[in-house]
Image (cartoon, rainbow, N blue to C red):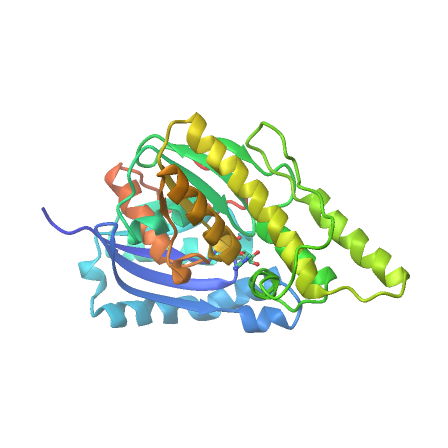
Length: 334
Ligand code: KG4
Ligand code: ZN
């Protein structure tokens, strides 16, 4: 059987990334150009700046990736691209670049949902075994997804308000922890103690999550302490916040595994890099005999290797887009 070589393009937020992956499991080359330093000056991603920088960099990143892989476009079987969800101006750059390349070189164009990409990042670690439960935790998503087989996504629960990464970033901002908030809150949480009485959010028998109440509790705590003339201990705040997040995510995830009779768990998205979540799920999965996979750290946050990997499975299932593929800021995973 001939190798299937997918060139993936990801530009949904503030990373311009291109990757070439063979047969949905072997990374040949990946280039990720992060705009983080630029956006750090503004305390968050500025959409107009992000799309402008994608325009400036996309061609360079495509050429660099092919050069790194020592391949030409003739060697590529198909082009996979993130069409959504994400920042519309950013997505458009990747979609236009991918459809132009596909048209010029007459290659199939494969549309990939950004979250499918995050999930399939796990296939670069170990072959995904079905059925499985995917816990998707990123800046825009917090979902529990049941996958009966390849490319079948049944959402069994999700956040009713803020995504977990978004809550991390907002808590960081209110506690005056610099951008990017999530990784820093995680880092300093290990230097603190769980002393602040924060609520365990949406501790019910659904698979849904809610982080806005926990976020508001942090904001109120910081303001009340300020009014009393007390200084908040950032490390203790980070530790208390992270403890609640880890507890509720792991509690609902472990219950889903039991109720669905599944013993494979994968974790996906930027917050899959979180050390508290990694440690707790590792401990619980070992206890319960559940096989647990995390993407390696470099594939947790946005990258095109995950898009090329998901693209391989979408390609095998015959998913194709026309050269008029539209970017979508929001779109359900299916
Ligand atoms: O998946 P991603 O790169 O972008 C989206 O698709 O949303 O995730 C980015 C999110 C940000 O909110 C960032 O603060 C968070 O992931 N994040 C973390 C950690 N590393 C990244 N949150 C908590 N702990 C971390 N170690
Ligand atoms: Zn992402």
